[in-house]
Image (cartoon, rainbow, N blue to C red; front, side, top):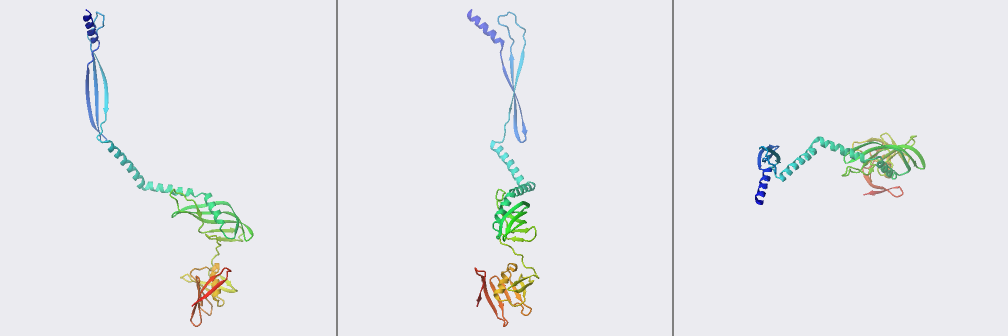
Length: 328
């Protein structure tokens, strides 16, 4: 009886639910953007058997309740290996890189950005510091004080930046105080790799002018005073002898007409005069004697009436006196 009762209970419990799984699959495949995909849908069907209440005599009518559980699985299967995908990505990045660097539009934009970066590195403070250092080298200029400093323009030329500056300056010269203006053009060092410049030099010197026009000074790169060169028709006096700048030949040589014949020492004094500095040389003549002398560098040539030509070497000693030696 015990065994039969246990079997009866087990049979009734088995009637409550008897799942039967019926898997059904549907496969879809295709190609999308060059990649082959496989779409798989799996349907799991669960069937419930008619149930009878345990311990009840009444048995419900047969009914079949079908319940479906849909489970969809998307499996994306790539024909490309991982390294091939990475290669495609790298190719795209390289294309963008070379396109942006070879495209003239991008090149022009980068050049403009570099141009502006270099100009921005040339600040007013940097220019003023360079000017203050340069003014200390100007000979005869004492206690220079720069006011109203202004950078007029900045422009890139070759591998440096040229700046035009101007302002007001108070200074002393030969024991007298002046209040004037200045203008100069400075050039920076070569542009560094980071598109910046650091130092300012004044290769063309500086021009300083007193407000009352009583004084005008021009200094060169080394801080020496630049004396205006003699113009045609102007003259200088050496030991009381008038020397007129008459003409300039195509070769660059000057012709000085003198009121009397100069000695070799006097000719070298004319050549050594700051107003008569001419590297191509100076020839001398009078109304009576045509081309009686020539001076160039440290040599003097003197023509004699008999047709001989004497040659001398000349120099200025420590006492600022001209010394000559005849060359045989």
